[in-house]
Image (cartoon, rainbow, N blue to C red; front, side, top):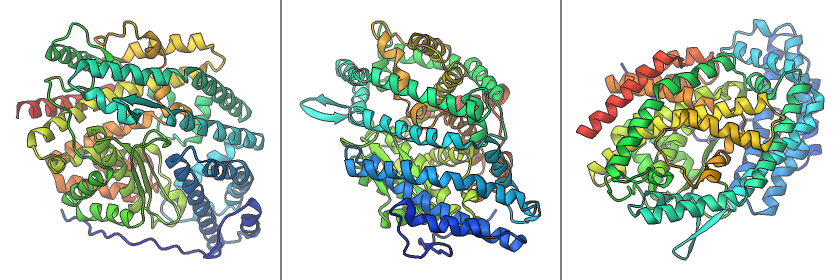
Length: 578
């Protein structure tokens, strides 16, 4: 099997509709190009394809302009000018642009020519256009604007939280590193400080979430749906599975993975030699070894990750090197920075931006490998002719990132001087996957209930959260005296606030990534080639076909999950015994 020779081409912007030097200032500045596109007639296949290319160009420009506003705001969320710039786009550009979207979708469909287009991927784009027409309601435009503004409040509220440790102010991300301390007293003290900070804004976050639920429900009802969950499945383009498939996944996780969690928790409790396993005992090394330190600074983390990518395939390292040249990284945690991490595609220039809050932990290392997988995906697809082909569903996007975490594991020695430390990091990561799948099921099940019951009270919300958490979490962790913390731990999940229902994808893709890794363990060259080939497709084929191209199944049945968990458990055991 010969790997396809891939090279990274520098960013080049070609415009035909917009002037090469166009710069968005106000809605009025870009309106003439919306009107010009609207006036473009579709009389034959050539003019239809020309219209779609011009639309793609305009949308790609606007997407990147918005992206930079969001990126800059999340890097400095206390800067009022950056907040205003972001809000200007949300309040002025988005509502006006969305009116044209529906008309353009109808123009393509009403031309009667769309079914004749032979371009690969056009039929996939068409089904999304038809679904958009089906769910579009002009009266929802102002609601989407209100929702966007509300969603941005989550980062501002949580990003401002700080704790003092040893006389030094730390972000919550930096403080979490202390939960790996071998001193149990230190772990507990830091855990309680972080929890107290989160609880200090619990009422604001509850109020914010209630507002979001109310407005999202209104959007769904106005679009003719029974609830926001059903609207979300349509708007997210979930053509390949249903809510019932999600419920089956929840049951499968409860049956196949929860027992493993209980075993791991019991093993941890015994190794630590403690009477009760508390939440602050979950991250420390159970054998009392010092916390792993794969890097000290974001710069060092990036340099090592580029070397890891090079060992896999020089093309992968080149992707990150080009991003360094373009200044597309903000990695270190600091005050006034949004929590979390992301890879934000920049649709016009093709090279994305990676944002994260590195604090020297293994999970930060994994985060950059994860976001690096997203970045490679963006770069592999940047030459696809239409932006619709580059906007892949999350089930595919997360397959790219989660597979990268696993197929790089043979190169993790690069992060550690001691091979034993690399082995520890691998075991920790694989055990984290076992923790992640039930957590995804927890958050997903919570969202299904939330939007099936939008008029619930805060007391009902809290009761249901605790019920769902108990369904999927291990039964060994002792929350005595921490009931309020436990009842509000869902508030740390930004997806609930910013991207509702975007979470089950992590589980679906995690199963896919385990299957990619299983293939990689058997035949590295073939598995890597299939993986990169699948990513290069973008969204020009259905999800199941993309998974098949990667050499895996799109499957999250109980039997398949059990099979992959058996493989995962075997890998952990082999590492422990090596």
